[in-house]
Length: 316
Length: 235
Image 1: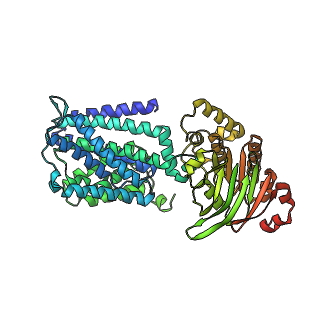
Image 2: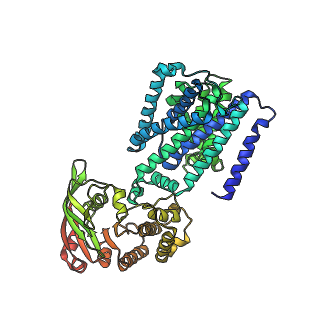
Image 3: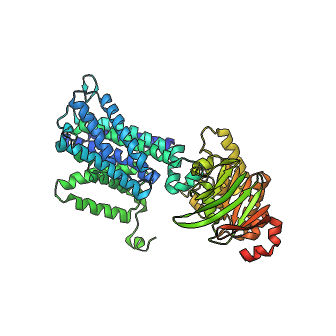
């Protein structure tokens, strides 16, 4: 990683750390900022699959939801240590991710997307209809987790800094991964899977590896969610949530890591702001997405490549 | 070194290879000639493990490799220089080359440097372009890169599928010299070509394939002069 990259990251981190000090910051905006960074981090981890490896996962909501449920179940049983909650999420999401990726990576393209979707729907249905986990109501009103005995993460401000630290660590993980030899093999797989095979790479193992990393990051993000909301519901695992994750990555720019973070922030803020005025907010979001795909095919991060309409029509 | 025995293979229910047998001995350069659609590329795929043969046997260095996966076959030392767009366009020249070496763990940085130097000695043009993405290279340079990549891997045998297809005459000469050089280095080569004159110029022996079977084989000199070559290949 270059010094310039690290310096840029440090500046961004400092700026984000200063966000709660903004004059108009209220509890409402802190929670919004929490969501923005959390979903930004999820979009970034999904970018490892979509942008770098060329695998479109349509089931990331299941990793997110399982992480949330792992925490909620612990907290409901008065196991309030954040670290135990995170460990539970890592074990649950990790085992599930191994199972999904074992089957999904055996197939390419649309079949990978469909298999991840089907597995996620199974998980959704299980939680939706299992009363032990609250059925359609999920697990509500769980207490705050504790960083250490007596240090509860019970305010929006504390949770905001928690998610900021998570985002920074997740970025560091992703960045190191894509800069490594492993990351280069992922790009090679995206560009031509067979070519990577005849160079001697066990492509399936690399795909499973990157699925696991992406799933675990998303799962840990999910594990932080009940700390902010106090609940975990099956709706977190709806297939539309997986679709939103993909949209965030697309908006931000494939294969850039930082782009999807911006895409996630953009999506969350836009959704919140528009939906507070109108019910049909998804029409507005859809329109924005169409415009971005047409005029900024490289996403928000590729804004310097914005083209004129005439140029676009002529395909140049 | 590479032994193909009575290989039958095809796609779906359509047979393409009807009992192909050929042999490449250590240090040899062998040409596999034939017109379009005669099964040459299918044979490459079957040797490389991308296509499971219906029957028959492929042996490499005395051990059967039929049924192994492509990456297992590659790790045993079979290098493929495939036809058409042959490299990773989004990765730089250096990254493309290093991918060739690193599939097997535990290879030292020293070895990597030595092999890189070796490749650049043969292809100084690649050294000039080391940090450029593969897609910015010309067709001939991409071909050099694909050959350099299997040299990095330390392949014991190199299978080349139509390396001169679509290249300018000057570049064809360059590739031809490169294949000769590989021969001097002791690398075994199986060259699949439609350009029979070029192939027979650099190879020791040749096979002619037609409709999924080998119809003629012999020393390159013999094939160059034989009327069969002209009849089967139209050269």
